[in-house]
Length: 110
Length: 488
Image 1 (cartoon, one colour):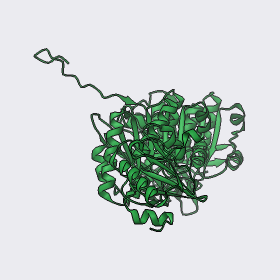
Image 2 (cartoon, rainbow over the protein chains, first blue to last red):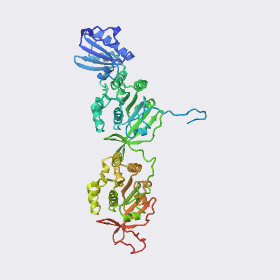
Image 3 (cartoon, each protein chain N blue to C red):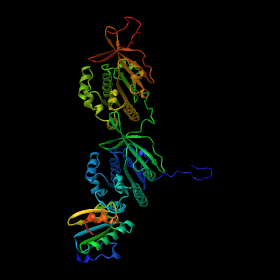
Image 4 (spheres, each protein chain N blue to C red):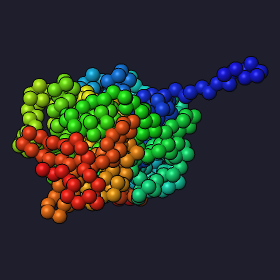
């Protein structure tokens, strides 16, 4: 498992990435490099760096590479973020540009 | 055809995929456009899901796998509903010929910015690859599109999907609910799609009727009327297109009415494959005439399908047995088949399908409908008329004689006698009535018309005995002659 775990890096944020800690576990479904998907990746990275450093795990799934992921998870719109916070699962759709709404949904204070 | 310049001016028909839904491919003149998008509009309960399920199911059975993405109904419900229409989806899924996906629209999801339907496209691609098919149905796509909450964004996403489906050359059906009566939720979809089909459900009298119409078919001709259909235990069934081409195959061959005197009064009996109407008030002897005919046909070894809208099989048999007509040997020999139905029980289309199916299955020489006046109770007058025209058309096409009875008021005009305005379809019209002699009532029979026959134009007295009916071979004398009537 540990070889799959490494610090997220802006330069390689396009594929599947994961954080070490797991207070927050995120799975972000994106559709290639399409603008909403790109924005969502960036916005999620910024949140993790600014407020959740060391407390979250991120996996990015590109549904255009992995068709079975969309089928298995029933992902219809992209970007879709599945957030697991201490066992409570919520889904957030959109490019996460609504930072305040996104943080409020996750219960994160500034 | 060769033009003057020698160039061929040919119309290249566009490729089509048969739907294999009974009767639909005739309306679509071959089926749905291959590699293109069809939009199916319709209100709740109009049968959109049943129709698209059947399209995929029949295609899969014939070797063309497909995928159904449902944005509304759950897979278990879809399977159960299909089961009730004789389609076993589970078996096709096991054979990997069909994939059913319940797409759970994230209504409850928190929205944090803009999004698009990349996930859906991936889901379609993945599902089609899993079965190796190129037929896709998106059922109730409006349910997904509503999460955009913005008409401009919905439209953009419809275009994205449309372009992707076209690039992939998939044969797609998109079903969308009609917003209100005959109003479309997304009018621009009709411009986008290559084929547009609308389903409509309405109440006709007390009875629900469903109609399909094709409003657009790019690159193809199609039948442009409204076509009734039913959701039956055998899937969606479209009714035979009514009477555009009525083959006149009533032959010159004569068949006996079952009574020698009546045959004589008629000219020489009935004509095979013609339509005979026996009209008269209650108790005038219509059913007895019909059963006499049925018994005689059975004795000749010809099969009769007797549709009784008035009484049960056993009470029909008992009643005519009291009048000396024994139908039991025919029932035992299989030359007589009695079908009973309550007119109120279902709509016109269901009745028609049942009878037409029985005509096809039993292959009778003759059909008796006792009585067509009951057809009014299936719905409106128009529904009753539609029913009769379509039944007579179906029977004529099969070369089956139709003997109809119709209950009329005591004093009726000839138009009333021919019942539901079907007089042009009736070849022989026999009126049974009571004459008031002052001292009592006398039964009489009058042949009002019988095409191609030298029939009696006079009233003949009629008696009903316990040996069947007896007709006086000699006409009743004119009314003015007092005491001249022979009514012993």
